[in-house]
Length: 109
Image 1 (tube, rainbow, N blue to C red):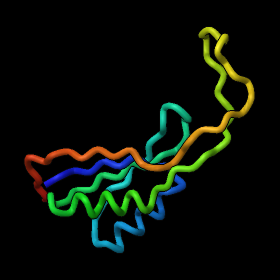
Image 2: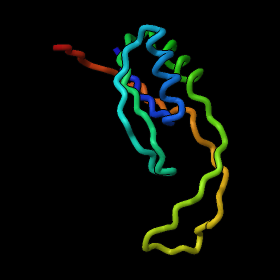
Image 3: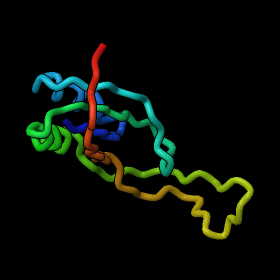
Image 4: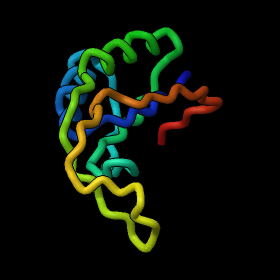
């Protein structure tokens, strides 16, 4: 058995959730916040059998597309501001960060 941990942008959360339900996979959703953009994310915890890992990864890949977005950088707090860029910059957002972990034991009460 495997535990898939997928961190996705909130904008992709609903699409991924619906795709997992449609494919009969259960997931637990947790609200999370990214450290770089300080934007909302959703972390999915998905327990699957080893044979289903690639299928779930395909669903995640299809549901969570990366895209370009303009952001206004946050001013540094108490640090040197020599590298601070005061105007919006374009960054790549979206997609998914995925971890696949071996589950030694699963118990449901």
